[in-house]
Length: 406
Image (cartoon, rainbow, N blue to C red):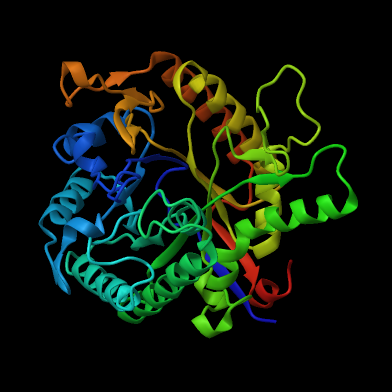
């Protein structure tokens, strides 16, 4: 038996995510959310605000479309500013290399996509190492492969603007993802990999036949395809390996559960819950048991007035995992600063801990007081649960289990 200890590298259990999308939207227009939200301008002030709410770990993004100015030519000037801001304020940064966006001359289906992505990964890790930071580099190579494969491969809402081609796009993304992990580990074997995939629940109608129940279960399991590729459980020709699974992040929002046919969203806070509605703790337990790795809630938030109710809801579910000694290593509020709709930049979601008022200027940061109050309460709740826990600093996993669990 080949056991391995996975150490918890995070400075804080509560994390903040800055929306860093730089993709082409439904209209074919480039968005750049680090500028739209003024985070690049206000990064020092943003980091100072975080510490008042016990956030010392953040998710940030490179913005591939902005860094690779020409094929294999990189401008890391903005990245340097961000790295130094993190060091100055004692903020640990998790880096998304591809958070939805890539250069305009590429798509996931382009023959050069994998080579260009792997080269960027190598250049980034080498550049990061030149700073001599003490903390390990934590990287998400490509964010939400499952979602982006659907968005760009099935419903033509972003590049490569395909329909009914989600599998080919997913396969291409994961080919690049695996190549990126391989080269990063060659440059620096201590690099930590954090996958970030949507966590969903798909189910059959209450009056469904056995065949419909089976089909719904198959649709539900499709959410694991990307991670299955990463560890080599499927499509071994891509080069996935069990050791490429490190920490598993899952992104979960209020609209992540639905009935397959006929399509029906399941409300998370209905007075009488739908019989098919599953607890978040149940879904995260399922994911952990499938892969035997530490897990994070790597994205979660809710728009508008239900924000504080949602924070309390997910916190109660997280305490259940801690009490069951399941290695849950963090919760990331994403976005921490409000953001607009990708396809309509005038439509702001009001989903952050801080709102923005574009009419007052893009440097506005308006604390949502009910959410702030709920967050501080829930931080105390989680801290009390973590105090007696045994599994929050390391996790002993069995290498062989990666290929045997299903």
